[in-house]
Image (cartoon, rainbow, N blue to C red; front, side, top):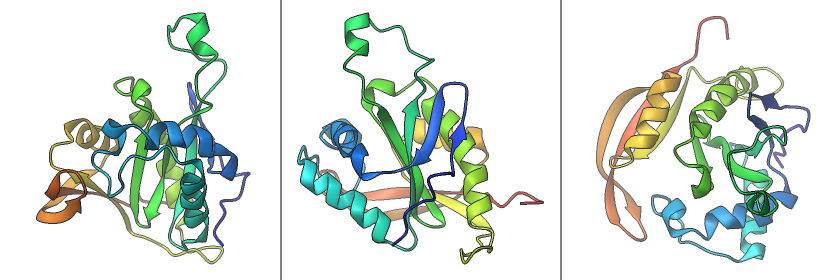
Length: 195
């Protein structure tokens, strides 16, 4: 079983990245039940808590899966009315190596367009390089990749800001349950020198 060491975390001005846990399921359901969030994934929206818990367990059971929760730090809040703050999820996104060396992320739609994905990915990549360094039994990867639907320009821009470069375009390589066959843009980041 691959459960990320709880001491492995990263903190930014607004965020805490920490290992994904089973008690994150209720907040993750808020993302997984949203059709817009799930539109470009291989999974249909679902509000079923037990299937979300099974998904988290599957992440822990997969040897090449290394996932983190993205929390908004309590010291930081967006300008929401005070009554809305009490209903905010603790976990506002997820990020990790979904099939190492492939990485991916998902955010609660309420936090789209606020620079959260870029901030989280900048914090995650040093963790990725350190973990997948070939030490302590983990593989060593010379690169990291992200597979992105050709129409997701925001995600492509996030990857570019962090240092990923377009490697190739694969035509009709992904069958989406809602959109059908889709083209993927494959972005790659090479391991930085000294990592």
